[in-house]
Image (cartoon, rainbow, N blue to C red; front, side, top):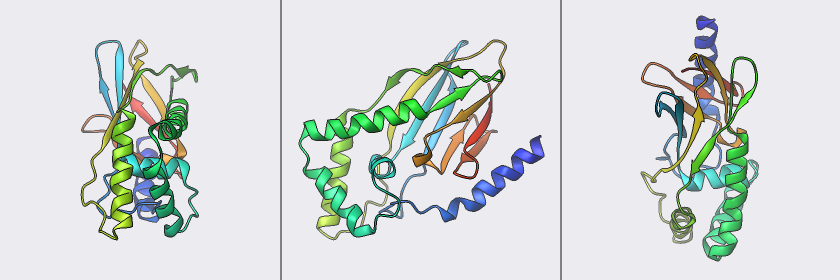
Length: 195
């Protein structure tokens, strides 16, 4: 079982270069999900994501040419706060509904206490990216990550869980402690966590 998992991880990492997405920045942060103990009965799940990359991943078709993506960024940057909040609502709903943890028996575990950065943080990141595009400036070398957090109950006794994330976030690195790190991709959409 372990060697099969290592082979799958190797394939996922080898395929990582094939995923280009809509990245407008060669310095884009990796998409990460950190799993940590938050106490004897809770797990903490923390996404570290580039906000512009996430919005494009969820809301821009993968086949869009760069010119269409730039136009989308400029439009979002000019949106009113209310319009942008509506846009963010669909992204929040999809990410929260499509992040799933399954116990060994197959039942889905509840994720609760979601904490999101303010809409203003996301909108400012889009406005900055739109300004860079409009002014024909190079993209930011090191875009700032936003953190999105939630909690999940830990089953007793501790056990192995299966995790899935929304497909638009593939490839995404899962870090479950220093000794357990792997990628979720379109080829390997689920991973196993020992908790």
